[in-house]
Image (cartoon, rainbow over all chains, first blue to last red):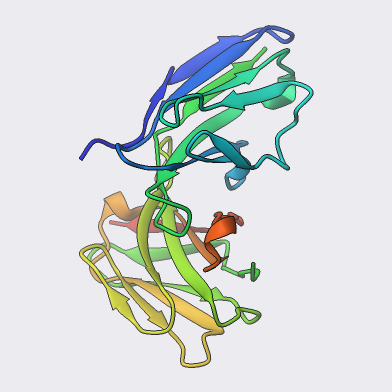
Length: 113
Length: 112
C-alpha cells in the first residue's frame, strides 16, 4: 500500500517569498492533517480536514498560511509571505476517518533565509 | 487530552529489550495510548496503540497498568535501526477531535 506522498522534499526560499507544499494521502483516507515540526520539537498540528471540509484550523497562522483540499483528496499548504521562523518540516498525515490510526508522510523541509 | 510524561533520553544495548516508560496519570476512560517513533529525517511512524489491554504486534508490545496511569513500550530485541525519538500520546476516543498532540518524547539510543 502506498504511503502519504509529499513534495517537494526540500525547499529553500528567501524571506517574504511564497512556497507551496503538496500532499497526496493514502488512498481512501478521508481525514488529512498538516503538522509543523521545528527542529528539536515535536510536531504541532496546523490544520485538520475531513474530506474537503476544515475540522480544526485553530493553530494555523491565517495571516500567512493557507491550506485547501478542494476535491477531498490532495491538499496544498501555502505560506505567503514566509518568515525566518517558518523554517521547519511540514508533515502531512492521513487516516481512514477521524478516530482511526494516523499515518505520516516523510515531510517537506523548508529553510527560509 | 491527558498529558504524558516521558524520560528525555534512554540507552539500550543492541539485542536487548528496550523498555520505554510513559506516565499518563490523568488519563480518562475513553482515551487511548498511542506510540509513534521518529527516526532522524523521517516522518513519525505509527508503532502501536491500546485502551486497556496489553497489545502486541510485529514491532512492539504495549503494557498498560491496570489503573491505566502508566504504560511501557517494549521493543523485544533492539537494533541500531530502532534509534529514534519515541512519542507516547494519549488521545480521546471522540471521533470528532481525533488529533495527535506531540510532546518531546524519549530519545532512544541503541548502542552496539
